[in-house]
Image (cartoon, rainbow, N blue to C red):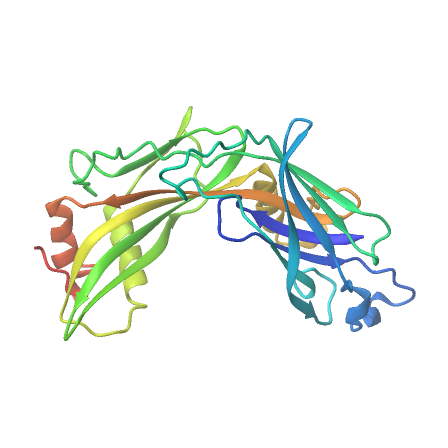
Length: 304
């Protein structure tokens, strides 16, 4: 039986699957764990299809990019790493040609190998990225505090159940030369819904502290830094991804309830998505906090 793991983002630059196999072991399983041939297939064929109800609209095959054949029992130590041959065309690839995007409803995966007793299948629902509603595109003087603090919000989605909120901050460093740089950090994991929408009020101290931790990894010296803008990044996962994380949180494997959505196999294929609201700017009062605040003043931000 195949053991398959993959977190699929249909709009990313590449999709990767990890495929191993369960072992038909005679005798001592522990001794067999030292024989990678029991657990790593010789070859695997994978096809990802996108359907609209009963109509196949698009597909891609996967090709092998790495072979990891080490002693062990699990997919991350024994198996093949495969990457999709092609990706869905980006919506902004052409400004002059009207591109019609099909109405996808679900993915279908077919995984086969001479080493498997029978092909494996998986089916997951397709969903478009969730839109970030707050702050609005018109908000170009975002505050971290005061009468209008930074609030990030997005609607409840039928398919996506797990959300992480991240920030990417762009800035320039001025020394002998000018260097543009950026840092990213996760503000909060596993955001919970409030009523009919998700909403996070960003706490200034927490934001600036996490920013300072991220900036501390930039070891190049500089005379001063100037903030350019920042992006809000929303990472989402579907119900399969959420169930996988719930299973992984158990401290003892004795109490784990295995989660698998592979037919004739084991493992997980889940859907992920990333939404970005780009080019937001901070209010001058917030830039003051970057320049003289207790968390970030050592990084020499200027207020002009």
